[in-house]
Image 1 (cartoon, rainbow, N blue to C red):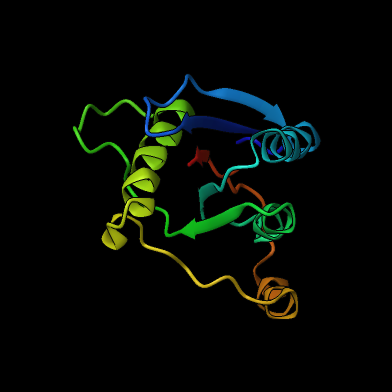
Image 2 (image 1 turned 45 degrees about the vertical axis):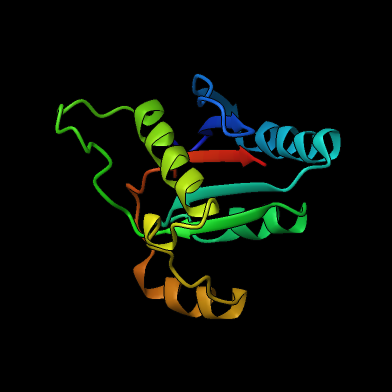
Length: 140
């Protein structure tokens, strides 16, 4: 369980994804803002929907980053039975690359509710044990 950090993979300009990095939540948003400001390019992000809600999506969208939220899924396509946050983030990054290039079937997007809808839906379901989503950024 990772309540204090995100695991992030960055892919730039159609190249290979870079190794996974770990960021504290506040440091991650600072890094994302600097990335957007420095590059000036269109930036896309993706993460799996989870029990932490959609605040991250709203924060990234506020920074001018196109943030997609997808259904949780099995990301071990080669069935190696090895699961790490870095491998999951890389797999999401590769799917995001295909999605941005026009393959709309590459990601199973979920609708992001309004803050009010999210608040009403989460009240009865609050509990512990949710995992922090894996992140991926694609700079085009």
